[in-house]
Length: 375
Image (cartoon, rainbow, N blue to C red; front, side):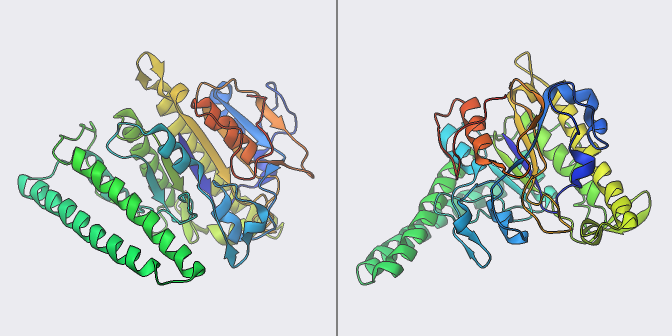
């Protein structure tokens, strides 16, 4: 499973088709993906039923109840990627990769999972074997980590007996973090001396900082393709956020400014040039998965890829009618599935269907009210 978030949204009139069903007339953006149209479904009329604002980004992949997504008072639940990672327990080097900007992935206690924002560092972690000295150092790090966690756990247990209920709840969160750290150390220990897979490409040497945002996105997509192809992980989340300028056709365009276009044609034109480049990059990623065979089956058919935004209209900060596209995964794709754009269907209903597609028994996730049946 791959979850991709676009925190600045997508311009809805250029994303959603006017017609629905398998024979929809593609929109401006979907024309860029038309060669793959049998491999994905676009959903409209779907959201988490939150109020407006950037603060709801924390709930994009968790679907936490609306009352838990109030500005300044976020009480989150587990995100879809972490639920899958916990439930499938895949025998891979990395249980899940959390990439890009932070705030997309959350554990069962509603604590954010730290993300990695440098592709060069992830490439090294997945594909570059350490020297004997580096491996010995890593073994020592694991041992030291266990010793530290043992000490912290003992202190936390002792302290918990002296505290009131609110503070004991905080200790409980700490104990959850300790358990997760122990699980990570255990996994690291199992893999530390095993040779890493050969990526078959030159090591990444740049993270494409600043305005090279499209190059940066392509690098993330290349890395995710390699990680899935080598079975280094089976769960990935990526949050793509470009608040600053983006270079398109040699010109720098302010992405945040363009997304808050105020219905001004010149701003919308600049925004479209950015989003078309991003959609093309995403399409190339899907195509790489499609042409990669795994056991005689397309890697795209084996992988659910969710592409979604937390804002339906970034210019107005609205969070209804979110741009949502689900590709691959062996699903029976239905073209454009259109729900009521005024009374949205909970996006968590789609999450339930995605869990079921991975043979994870589930009839509820986040604030779901059921499961989508069209795919």
